[in-house]
Length: 281
Ligand code: C2E
Ligand code: CA
Ligand code: CA
Ligand code: CA
Image (cartoon, rainbow, N blue to C red; front, side, top):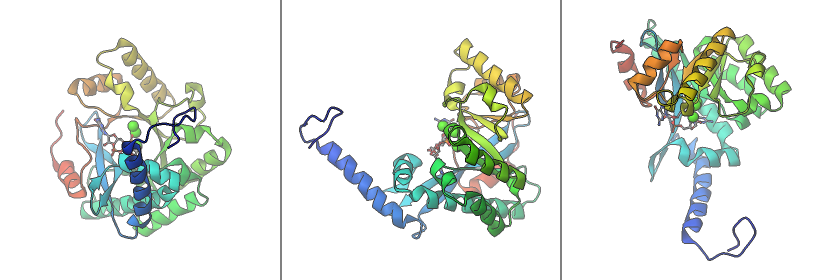
């Protein structure tokens, strides 16, 4: 087969063949997976670092594959982006997350959970009518716009800024809030941040990983948290795994955290149990 960057002819490699076949199989199966109701949302708590209470949850999609079992996004999101299936999958995730959130609220109106956060791929966002589809999803679930946080990527906010920013402004006018996911891994300049129509920065795990071992990383996170506070943006620190990291973040005044220290992604009934557990301070 022809392969390699320079177009050289290489020895046939069965593992490449298998990988390619797997992608094709995934692509074909993804096509039917929505109608077959094979997607599930798990939810990971976002914790108020001051009170220890769960403030919100992030919906994280899983594919219950008929033969391969429960698959994480790593196994299919990229293929779904390429084929365009991500638009339908993402819309399903949004509708299901809002329906689930409405059920939680109906069961316990006093629960500490204030919102559900949903990942939106660039392709999904750019497919015409996204704002309208969000509005429909809210209506269908009987959900208030304040219950929804949408996570978008830095690169989406930077590219075709005009159209994207208009849609973001419309969503915020509805009352939906916007987070920049994996903040710090892209190229947005901090000064630009002031003008962006967003509410929340999700600080990427790669920043949190080294805050206890690297003075430089600690200073970096400290500065971002301070800047965000000045700009009236909330910060959610991602990938908090150690109590020391949590303490350091709280000391900096970082308001929210998410990570295995608090909980891995969980099923809806597990989330209910977590919201009932007494917070440790
Ligand atoms: P993400 O949006 O950055 O989500 C966080 C990922 O980090 C999740 O992986 C979560 O399980 C994992 N994580 C959370 N806390 C920790 C921690 O303390 N340590 C470590 N090592 N990992 C942690 P997951 O569920 O496998 O999702 C991977 C990615 O797939 C997500 O990254 C997101 O980009 C994408 N994704 C998930 N659901 C959706 C969706 O509905 N739509 C779209 N477009 N993308 C999705
Ligand atoms: Ca996310
Ligand atoms: Ca993230
Ligand atoms: Ca990430």
